[in-house]
Image (cartoon, rainbow, N blue to C red):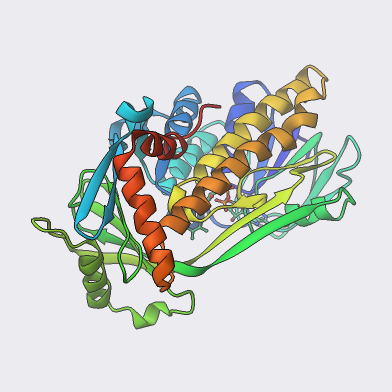
Length: 389
Ligand SMILES: Cc1cc2nc3c(=O)[nH]c(=O)nc-3n(C[C@H](O)[C@H](O)[C@H](O)COP(=O)(O)OP(=O)(O)OC[C@H]3O[C@@H](n4cnc5c(N)ncnc54)[C@H](O)[C@@H]3O)c2cc1C
């Protein structure tokens, strides 16, 4: 097998990269070690920045997004006795969309399988070789158990946090640097058949811990509770979860709507950055190179920003034979990564309680500031809706 760009991983980063390259006449093959059903059912992010919506729309992936996605003009910040709306268009002229990552992935997979570049599910034993030459290759075993070799001009490592690509960059003696922060809390997330009881997402600070009210559609809510990372999901009955949510979102005159919980899980929270995002002809993008805690809704959006940059760099490299954008890719991508890493850390630090009384007063002071100062609110709005590319 031969292709121009071998792409490892059919998450949003890999699928969108393949699509953007195809639109520019560059061929690729996407290799995914899970099944189509698994990849399409994986519940993860749900907030799309305006940039992401624009990119998906320009890539011909906007039909269902514009039909079924929910356009949001802001968020509510809450602390005891106060629920304050930040109006994003008024603050920064931009907005966000609620459209699940599962739906983004389904749209991209459908387009790929309807005449797009090859997309192979259920592969195994993926190994990247010769990335320091101009003809790297990927060895893998296909779904029928046959060992195959994919010869490439470039390999894109879009295989998420647990994929094999990042280790290949590290082995190259490129002076790989890692930065990591593990937070002392986790999110217990549920998906519920309950109509959202709010027009915008609610980010709530409460002495018991943070809570987030978000939604996936007019009939499905996605809610989160800050919990200790050592908590086990089996210890959280549906009643216990709804009670915790009712306490943390409590506000006079407002009621939580409840419903059947269809999914629940506990997610650890971590910030992680690996640099450089390139070794020779191997380029990393998305969670393969960086992770942010979900409080700033940046993970999926950063993956999209990476592949927009990377697709431009690869078009220049493979069509114009110019290396300038490829050489600049890692540094350019990392500037945005660090901005999002700071914003996600800041939102996380402002909203999650540690049990320390001094910390709590600092957090409440910061929340009051964001809710009363236009400058402070604009800083949050600009980062949340996504700084322009
Ligand atoms: C449980 C969870 C919940 C999240 N919730 C939120 C949220 O609420 N808000 C938010 O903004 N972000 C959230 N995120 C982050 C967001 O989902 C990610 O940033 C986003 O998925 C990144 O896309 P990606 O394509 O880079 O990586 P991924 O989506 O991880 O895709 C990588 C793909 O590579 C495949 N792969 C891995 N190893 C191999 C291999 N050896 N061979 C072939 N394929 C391989 C994987 O199966 C996967 O399909 C969450 C992440 C997780 C893990």
